[in-house]
Length: 79
Image 1 (tube, helix red, strand yellow):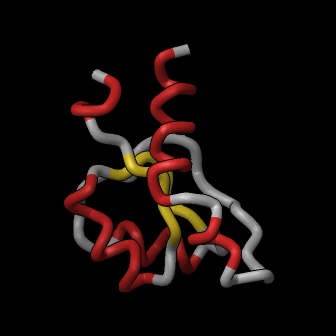
Image 2 (cartoon, rainbow, N blue to C red):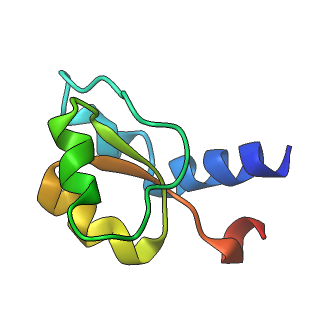
């Protein structure tokens, strides 16, 4: 239940308006956190995924660079 609250809080922190601008967006993501290794997010995108799983805030710039949306996972908001 705590994980669900974290995901919901993360979604509402960025707000649904963040997704409204892209009307062709369909979320497809691998389940789990991607390893923090160079090139992994590029490989995720190359496989046809549109989102990265649960990423730390430090990986958001790389997600944006690869054109991926993300669910942010931060221990400060959920332990």
